[in-house]
Length: 119
Image 1 (cartoon, rainbow, N blue to C red):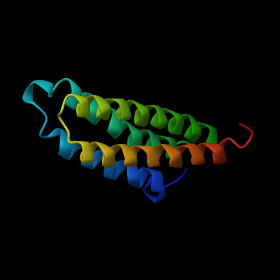
Image 2: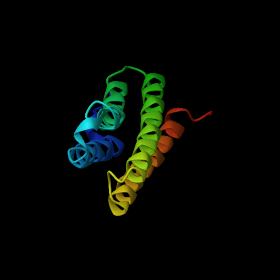
Image 3: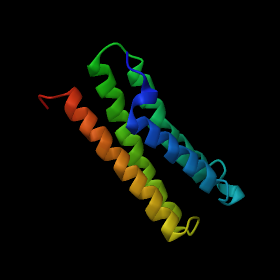
Image 4: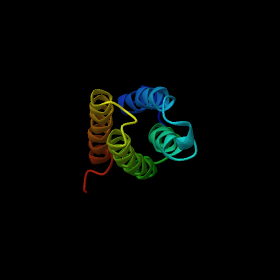
């Protein structure tokens, strides 16, 4: 079992989740059960899956949850693009959030390579 607090990928995912919660607070009210909820759910899923994987006993299980987190980060990237195109977020906010998501994806990919050296 690993302490997820020590993983830089989890720390970055947590920071990104906080940023997404802040930015979606300004989304149109009619999106509260739509795009706002989707973005918050997939973003918080990144950190939650890293944490859950760290609570498992084997590296293979951590790798599986990191893979799920990677998928959630990709989902968030799409929702960010959609939010930008709908003009719910500004271009510079979009760029910053996508950069953060991309960095997390790189970190998760690196972690997966370490956990699955033969892949």
